[in-house]
Length: 277
Length: 319
Ligand SMILES: Cc1ncc(C[n+]2csc(CCOP(=O)(O)OP(=O)(O)O)c2C)c(N)n1
Image (tube, rainbow over all chains, first blue to last red; front, side, top):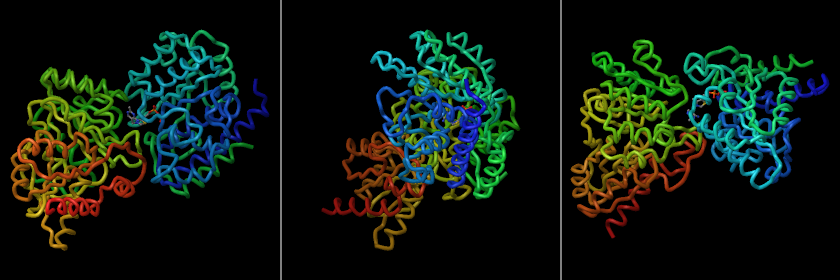
C-alpha cells in the first residue's frame, strides 16, 4: 500500500511529466494534448512503481512491456521516458519535426523504451496479446501492460483481442482503459455509446476493476489486485479527465488536439505547480 | 447559384459543400464518418441533415459495411475517414460488401500521401491508390483544387457504382475556372507542350508539375501538363495522344510508384505504343512525420525534382 509520502512523491512526479508534456506540445505549437494528459498518472505509477524496466537497457528480454495502443498519447509517453532517463530531455523539442525520433504516434523502431508501434487505433490490443503469449511460451516472467482509449474501444479489433486474451488465459496481461468519456469528434456517449465498459469486459472473461484513474492509491491497489489474478487477463477501467492538468482543455469538447502557445503553456504549468504542496 | 470556389480555405470544404448541395436535390444522399467528422468539417452537413448523417465512431470497417447496406436500400452513401484507414483498415469491406456486391458506396479518404504531415508514418497512405486500383471496376478520383474537388464529388454521385476519392483536408488552391467541365475518366490538359508530357494527380503534384513547366519554359523546354484527376479508368486516349505528340512522359503522384498512376500509364503504353515513361512517386518506402515542406523534399516531390526528372527523361529520349 502506498503511504501518503509515496503519494506525494508520485504527484510531484506527475506534475513534472505533465509539465514536460505541455512544453513539448507548446514547442511545436499544437498537438494531441487531451489524451496525453489523461494517462499521465497511469504512466507515472507504472514507470515509478510497477514496471520492471531499465532505461539503460531498454530491450532487456525479461522487462515488463507497455503497449500504448492509443498511440496519439505519444507526447506523454515521451515525456515519461525522457524523465526516466531513456533519452535526453532535449529530444522532446524535436516532437514531430522532420527526422525526429519522437513521431506523433508511438514507434518502437524510433524511440528507446517504446515497446510497440501504434497509431491505428485498436491494433495495440492484439499486439499486447501476442507479447503476453510470446513471453509465456518463452518462459519469460514478465507482465504485459496495455493502454486503450475509450473511443478506441469502438474498434472491433479490441473485442477480438479481448476474446483471444481470455481464451488463452493470459493472467500476465493487464490492460487499462483511459476512460475520459471523450473521443475526437465529441463525447463518446454522443458519438457511439460504449455502455458499461466494465460489464462488457467482464462478459468477455476478463478480471475487471473500475477506479478513479487520477487517484494513486486506487491505481496502486488495482494493479496489485490485477497481478494477484493469474488465470484471467485484467482490465482496469480508469475514470479519467481528458486534458487533465492542462486546464484550458479540461471540460472542453474540442480538447483532442489543441493549439498551445508558449504563454498558455506557462500559465497552465504555473497553475499545475500550485496544486502540489 | 454560382459557386465562388475561391472562398474555400480548405479542399475539404469544397467536398462537404458539394455533398450538401447534392443532398439538397437528392434525398438518397447520406453521409457517414468514423469519428473524423471534425477533421473533414462535415458538421454543417450534419446540422442540415441530422437524420442523414451517421457517425459510427472509431470503426472504419463497420462504417464501410454500413454504407454498403445503406446502398442496398437505394441510398447513396458518402463515407469518410482518413485515406490510410479508408484503404487499409476497411479494404475487405470495401472490396466485398461495396464492390463485389455491386453496391454504390462513395468512399472518401482525406489526408492522402504526404499531406497527412504531422500525423506521421502510421497515417501516411502511399498505398491506397495501388490497393484501390486492384478492385475491379472501381472509379478512383484525386482532385487537384477546390473546383475539381467540388465537381468530381458531383461526378462520384452521378456514377452508378462505388468510387474512391482522395481529398486533401487542409489547404487548397484554385487551378480551374469556375465553369470548367469535368468528365469521369477524361484528364484535363492544363498546359500544352511539345517536348515532354507531365501527367500528374492531386494538388501536391499537379501544382509542382505546373511550377516545373514554368521553370522549364524559361530554359526553352516545352512541357505539357495533364491533370489526371481520374486515376481509374485511365484516359488512354489522352495518354496515347500525348505519347505520340511528345514521345516522352513523366508521371507525378503522391503515392507509391508501384501500381500507381504512373504504372497505369506505362502499362498501357508498353502494350500499345512503347514510350519513355519516368514515374515519380514514393520509391518503396514508408512515410514519416514532418511538415509538408520537409516531406516534399524528403521524398523528392518538389517542382525542382520534377524539373530534374524531366531533363533526365529528355536526355534519354534524345539519345
Ligand atoms: C483506426 C483509427 N481510426 C481513427 C484514428 C484517428 N483518431 C486518432 S485519436 C482518435 C480519437 C481517440 O479517442 P480515444 O480512444 O477516446 O482517445 P483519447 O480520448 O484518450 O484521446 C481518432 C479518431 C486513428 N488513429 N486510428
